[in-house]
Image (cartoon, rainbow, N blue to C red; front, side, top):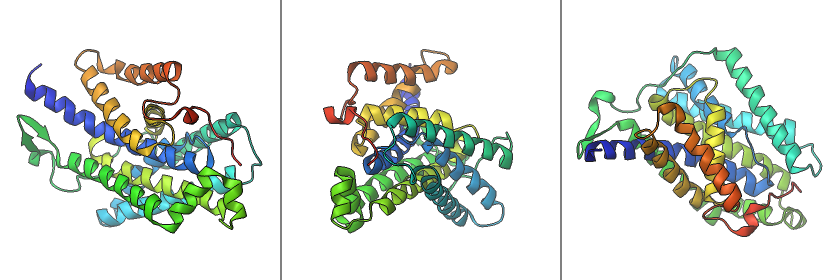
Length: 297
């Protein structure tokens, strides 16, 4: 393998790894606030891309992206209010089944609304012809948007949870919901907000990556599996670990293409997930406590 080809695989791996990391961060936001593993997170990414594609036909691209993020955030709130809020101390298995069911509903709804066609947004800046060259590897301008957006999301969440009152309240809710409620923190509203924030971040990721990977009604389920793998690998609830794990998984998948047929790329993800669950359920960057799923209080 030449140096140029290796760099090209690395760029592709970092790009896809960033997407997986953002999906995993969405998992972690909801898990930290509620203990729920939201398998509809991949559908939030899908909805963001599909709604933006539809809006882009009538409004400028920035407004289309903003509208898609807002609409998907509203869907996230609706999911929590309609399917989660009314439950009283449900089991983890029940919550998993519910979120899988929600994912199926969203996917089938997208199929009815948009059909089976593959769609994409235009490049945010430049095009494939204007790709940058680095040591022989070509880097699409949209790749820089993906990497930059991931970095901004991580920076925003770090500031939000570490330096804002709302972020502190969400952390308190995550630590002990009953104690937080006794202190006057509106825990129910914070749970809804965690779904809103997670859906908005997923939608933004779906918009940014759409020009590169394209989007369709069916992209959510594979992203959910890979995002969940990254969340486990990074330590469930550990967003910093999710970023590192996402980049690692993306690079491993990209390099595997040079050794295995493309059709077997997903085998890498599933193999890693199974190995982690057997060997270290808490993840490479997680604590032992993270290996046990929390009940919804």
